[in-house]
Image (cartoon, rainbow, N blue to C red):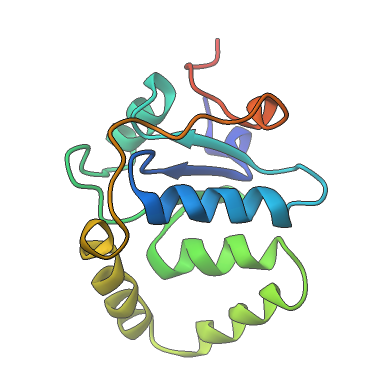
Length: 140
């Protein structure tokens, strides 16, 4: 599977309340239902996490596949927000800040996300209406 095939896919920590809440928000904002999601705890998510260097025990970011690139940290967040149109796409203005600053703020939140927002015992379960947007198994 090549990275272009993954465009619009968000790899996230399925037991993180902040991450699961972000996915729920992304689903609401994605009017065209163009985005897809996979928790890193799924077979497909696990494979992608290993391939792209996420720590399976304590992931410090999510990955968003955008136009042939596997983005992490603040770049992933900005690319995802751009997909939602205005006013969310205005977050792209943060690209003017040095990546080191953006990523420092992002990683501060990411490192403390369980303490701030909690952790689930198991991955979020998509509703029947959302299920088509979730990829859990490695495609053939």
